[in-house]
Length: 109
Image 1: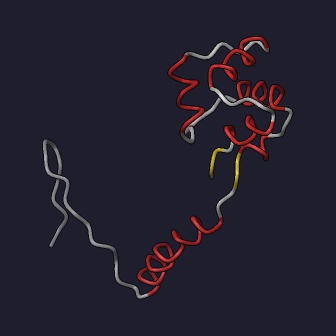
Image 2 (image 1 turned 90 degrees about the vertical axis):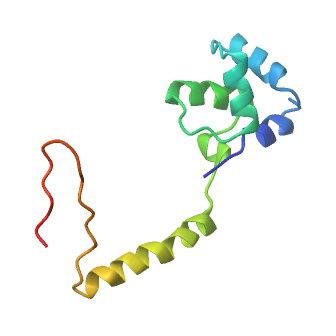
């Protein structure tokens, strides 16, 4: 997923994160300067649905406008999954590394 808030803000004539932060505050969402900077410049790893609702209301968009699917990224991850599935089909069990430490047993050889 790619975060598209900055482009949506630009489409509404909002060019600075401080302006966006002010508009969010007017809509009832107080965001710290650090969090606003992160939302403005990077893709958030998490976002509260309530916060997303206010952001969409301020920008006049839907969550689908803010979150852009990247199927090519998913496709790039697929070969690794396919390789693991192929290894599982050969009947060869995956390698197991013993966990050493207190009250740990080593698997039989």
